[in-house]
Length: 233
Image (cartoon, rainbow, N blue to C red; front, side, top):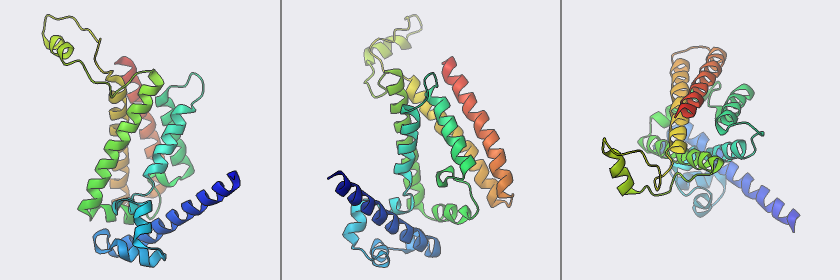
């Protein structure tokens, strides 16, 4: 039974990868907005229904590695070494992906075409922003889990109002812990700032190996700064 399920899962992953690869090729050739899901299905040899079974939104055909990104950060935080902080585990993960040339590292020769497809499509840009927000929420949840708190817990409005008064003492009782959300927002902001700088440099013609080397240094510094900021908070 286990073997059968394993084969089924492998087949599903192969089909998903095939659909995504075909779609990405078409999008990069003709532009995202000029290709329909029906055309992707025909080129991949599957039905349109099958495409939507794997990718509920057309944009996810191109931004298909988001689930893998969530899986990697979740594994890094939950399976971190004893005594290692969640932020340190993420820093190790991100730098390791860059060092190994992992596709989710986001920097490699030929990526200019990938970025241009996104820049040329309002729908893809909007979906990318949504995924960044979702990713920030995932990180906040992981940080809260590691700290034993709940970033989604509703804050006590009365307590917040009292805290806003200049003469009232600070009483955290009943309010959500902001630290996981702060940490997640800072990680995303730091990563994005370094990533966008790298993209701009490559599009300007800087050698990719130089950009990668500099990005590793800058990303390491940025994430260390985040760790210090969160610790101080």
